[in-house]
Length: 113
Image 1 (cartoon, rainbow, N blue to C red):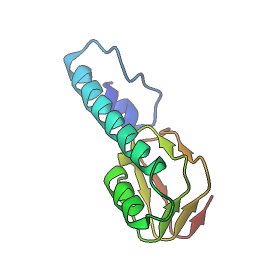
Image 2 (cartoon, one colour):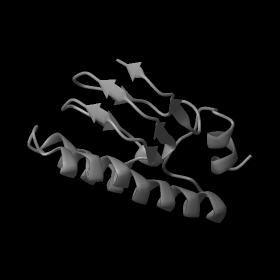
Image 3 (cartoon, rainbow, N blue to C red):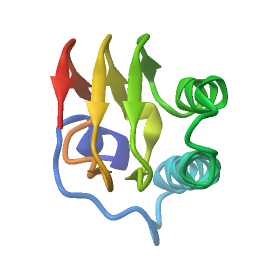
Image 4 (cartoon, helix red, strand yellow):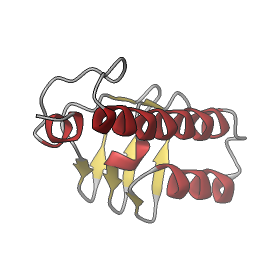
């Protein structure tokens, strides 16, 4: 079973040090996604609290999808934002940490954390 199949099935996987060419390519893609996510999280976590347009833009660039009226307090942490889907009217308090246990993670409308 290759790395991507393990991820899609929600199985434990190692992100680095793969020997097969196929897994090496997946590893490089994951590393690129992870670095992109870290850059966007840094931008979001250092954004002025009243700059809602910038915060919303960053979330839309970071996440798999992001509905309207989404607000996450400072301290957003995750590995791959592209696997997270937020619907309308989502609020998360300080230090939201999202661990990618399964391939994709959905927060449905009207969720508060």
